[in-house]
Image (cartoon, rainbow, N blue to C red; front, side):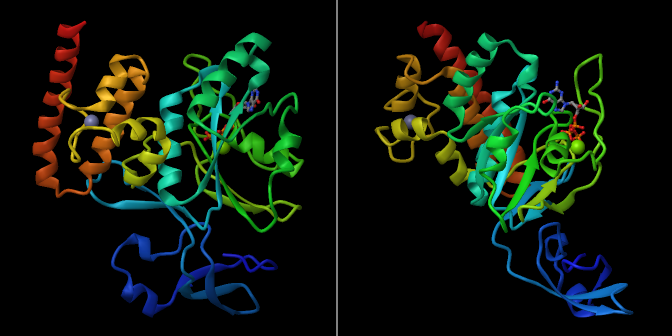
Length: 314
Ligand SMILES: Nc1nc2c(ncn2[C@@H]2O[C@H](COP(=O)(O)OP(=O)(O)OP(=O)(O)O)[C@@H](O)[C@H]2O)c(=O)[nH]1
Ligand SMILES: [Mg+2]
Ligand SMILES: [Zn+2]
């Protein structure tokens, strides 16, 4: 806990502890809190958490329903992806999650120094299809850092997101202008990161922008994605509005404008599959656990049927 001048260890007041129904009632990184400093600012008691402007959360790995807060009060999420191991699906998942949380997303493609000019041009094309706000950077040859910095606003909170090893902490060090935080090489064998950053940290840049660095996430979990889904897959949703039945699930061919568009090649079929998958997840966790188990099996069947139907009509 910090008040801008002092860093203090803090404890929750008894009242706050008592009122907590689950872990989301506890302070998380990015929270603004009402504190009482004690012992000459060596210790503090947290009396209240101010209402959160935005909340970024994920399903706790392994648990069925519990959510874990990633951070609060984030204005803009920087989704990092490494240019040499681009994963558009993962990018889309993050986009959905941020849109759903009301957080402005920005895709940051790192390590562009590893690509040739033509490879880079190809990637730029792909990214432009998936996301509207994109920057391309290199932390090692100092490319794009300046144009990213000028976009950062003071008193806004930015959160670095993305898999381990993509250069989140390296970017933060660049923005800070010194190698304050530890980074480490990706594994030679598979190019995966080593989970160097192990806990979330919040830091203020000299310009006044606030940054939260996060550990690369192994499991994104099921986010509140229904709304964000429509925004991210806007093109698909537009066709969806033309389906014959209002409650069309976009899985059965009859009267479905989305499936028609896929078949006519107007919608990329991989994108459609990804859309279905995320749509399913978003519907999925609005249900009780038992309902979910049943539905999960049924959905698997539906996808199989669709694929079969598609093969037969090809
Ligand atoms: N070639 C190249 N390497 C980079 C770039 N940015 C980061 N790296 C390297 O990638 C490795 C991982 O960087 P980190 O900053 O630790 O990655 P991270 O995303 O913070 O990873 P976690 O903390 O594990 O989530 C380090 O060896 C960096 O030097 C870049 O722009 N180009
Ligand atoms: Mg890191
Ligand atoms: Zn439909």
